[in-house]
Image 1 (cartoon, one colour):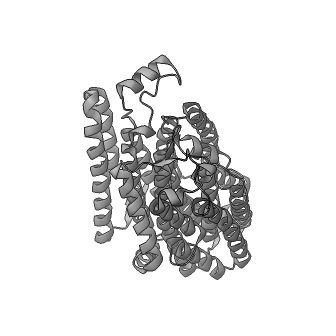
Image 2 (spheres, rainbow, N blue to C red):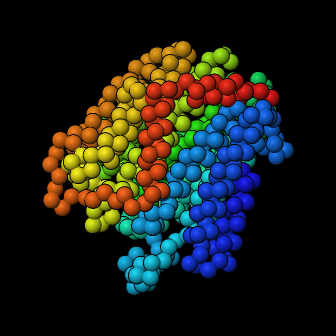
Image 3 (tube, rainbow, N blue to C red):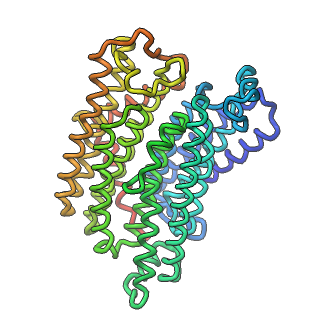
Amino acid sequence: MMLVFGAAIVGVLVEAFAPRHLRSAVHVPLTLLSLAGAFALTILLAVDGTRNVAAMGAVAVDGPSLFIHGTILVLAFVSVLLFNERLQFVSQAASVPGSTEEEDSLEEGAVQTEVYPLALFAIGGMLLFSAANDLLAMFVGLEVMSLPLYLLCGLARRRRLLSQEAAVKYFLLGAFSSAFFLYGMALIYGFAGSVDLAKINDALGSASGRDTLLYVGAALLGVGLLFKIGAAPFQAWKPDVYQGAPTPITALMASGTLVAAFGAVLRVFWVALGNLDWDWRPVMWGVAILTMVVGAILAITQTDIKRMLAYSSIAHAGFLLTGVIATGGPAQNEEALSGILFYLVAYGFTTVGAFAVVTMVRDAGGEAGHLSRWAGLGKRSPLLAGVFAFFLLAFAGIPLTSGFFGKYAVFAAAVSGGATPLVIVGVVSSAIAAFFYVRVIVLMFFSDPAPDGPTVDVSSMGTAAVVAVAAAATVVLGVLPQPVLDLADAAAHSLFVR
């Protein structure tokens, strides 16, 4: 985290003092090297076997936090490779859409390079958010992660008003969710006398006379966390933000933010509120069912590819919640945690790859977002359409893809934890979701392309590399998942070590 935050501060200094024409040449290697260095340090900590708390007890250094950190850093690295596509970001963020100032900056070829330090701050916030060992550090991580993303969502080069609308919606709703989280933290502190997760759990045994503070505080914390993962009924922001944000930022949010948010969910509900599971599990059942059903059904009605992927993300958040519900004894918790960690890796790579493909399909107005524009893509560009179809099949959970083993891992843990009815809902929702995935595949390969159909832009080597890496990861995790499952198992053993 120190390395990522340090690189972000250096990036701010580069923006302040480096000549404009040299900034990209400095930012790109600085960002990628810092993420690669942080990943190397994460591996060293994992190999060293360090399991303790750091920063005066505010940050947990255990197996799950290191696994999640490694996942976030890898997904962030490949997402940043998409930033090199200059057509994605506005040339000058402060200019009014359609103004003369904006047209002049476009003609000059100006590039908005602030996206790199902003992204590093957001990634650092993700790392802190997922590994926080007390609620105050978790709130700081939440804000450091969210504030740069609010800005980044409004920097799309095309459809500026839609992008700025997405940023404002995300900011307003995110501010409300942060307020819920902060108020819930205050009530939990009033109940337990501490914001430390372990001490909150210890205080659950002496709740006499303060039950109201505990239950209301836990509910408000849940609202803040469920908003971040896009669970229903707090999912309304996701389709609008995913559609309006620059696609590289959408890829970063859809992968890294979801991983970080589930890390925080696990720490709050398993570590801090683990002994209260008989109270929060029934509520979480309802949230998981509603999230899976809403995500799967509403995705069918979408005509924009990014909005469809947003509702797909909502459904996958519901699938992951089935693993969160699968609590029991230590062995049961470890099985569920291992499945969740594997699912996050598998889903993260597939998501980044899918959004990378979206950036490559273009028409005169920029990205070809409407589904009708994807008709006949399999005849225009069979390779790219085939890769995208493979990603969609992985989302659907077809065997020999990473999505199949991810769903199997969390569903098996849920069955072991006595949540078989929830798994049945998940399987039915997966079948519904498969319909709109297959619909896109049929549209690409069995429809005639329009004469003015979109073109495929393969000029960016970074984007092509991201698609290749994501496709390779989806294949490997679907054919040979055991090495990553073993890593997830080893990480899951140390969540409860104190």
